[in-house]
Image (cartoon, rainbow, N blue to C red; front, side, top):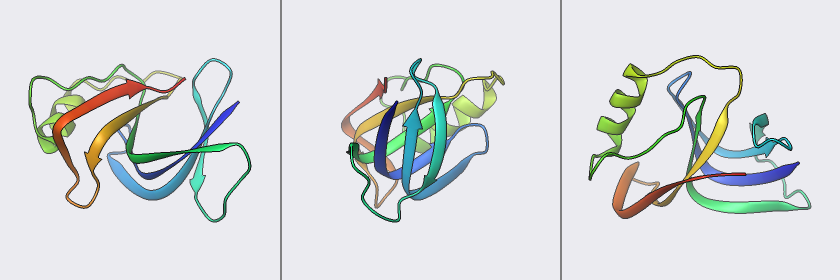
Length: 108
């Protein structure tokens, strides 16, 4: 199991954005738990920016803005059993925007 803490989590299934979250990944890389960050927990890696939870692989098309990305992903959403986590870095959390060099990386 791996544990990550992050500023924001965006779930493509619920279209909700939550702040200061901890997520745990199982041995296969699926999201097993998501809960609010209340205190530091041993063996937790801090990820600045945004983590996206999705049952399908996610990628940014060209230089699309975050709101366009959200709309496109909602249109293609399929329900699968396993949620995966994708780290967006760098990401402007205050403005909730991609920045010029934003990349989306799968967490494992």
